[in-house]
Image (cartoon, rainbow over all chains, first blue to last red; front, side):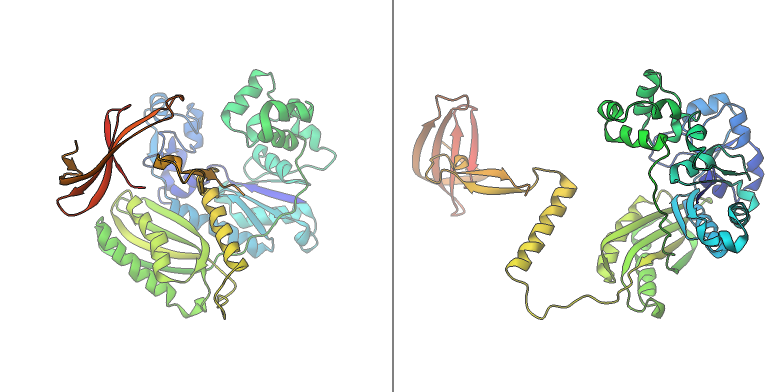
Length: 394
Length: 60
């Protein structure tokens, strides 16, 4: 069976770790600097006063003048989430995190160990910890498990059997589907408000009206595809940090500190020469907040300059002076070398590389971005009529 | 007559000619070309587009 654990408003709960007194007060996660002024997750007290996640900041404050805005703390959230995943892995399940606060796992491997599905789910719920108000859903398919976890109460385990899937999903609202708001609105205007109503429509008609997203939503509303869970590969534990006695906002100083951290990380013998696939740069900000950016490298590398070029520019996005800078190597490659060339690449090999390069340019800039110059009238008196740009999309 | 090309004074006009073409299309070409030598010694070709009443430097 596939199980799903959902912790609603995980980022807010993580941000409140340092201010536990606010858990019972009306509070909401403030929007990130530079983003649209929309509220993040809200506490139960704020919800009771009518404040909803995704509401405009002004509207939320008008409804509840005592609403406390909590600054996002992505570094703490990431750390706490990683701790939750590790506790689950310690129970013996291979986890597939979907986003912070939502994780899937297969119960089959631990059912005999703990004496059944329910017992295994109880064990997993216990591993997450009572303070997170986690809820568990389990079913034969991923989406049904997610839906079950979303409708379960805090601390509740909801198991949906294959036979009961259709009846269970039918009365649930459409917003459980991964559909954007205009599409949901379109469905509501067509009188479709529940998963069962969508599932009852002919698939071809839904695809014609709503496109591939709609077709996928329709398939989910009927229970979704039977997919296997892919357990994650546990992240590497390579972290270096630098604390500053005074808050630093100067980019040059931060870049120097970043270079020191990078040198220290690359010099760690435990890395055993493996290349970096994913790295994160995080900072504790003056005033208590935190900031974190993750970079996945297209080509894994251990080259200092390339890593600096990929991560360094992120420092310019720091919203406030920093009291601690941290650099993490999140994922390393298995290999620790690159095939060297005995002979210089030529002919077909170069063609393959050129094609791959052009494919990547097209992928990032769209079709029509790669052109060939074709000579059409070299004799023309008008220079711009001598050749044409012809798009190359092969 | 061009006197300055890209803020450099023109020292000499070596040749002058006209190109009138595509007058039967919606994008007719009517240009007055000059091959000039600038005071720096650089050779360049400029033209005045009679349709748009603008000066251009030719790079091709």
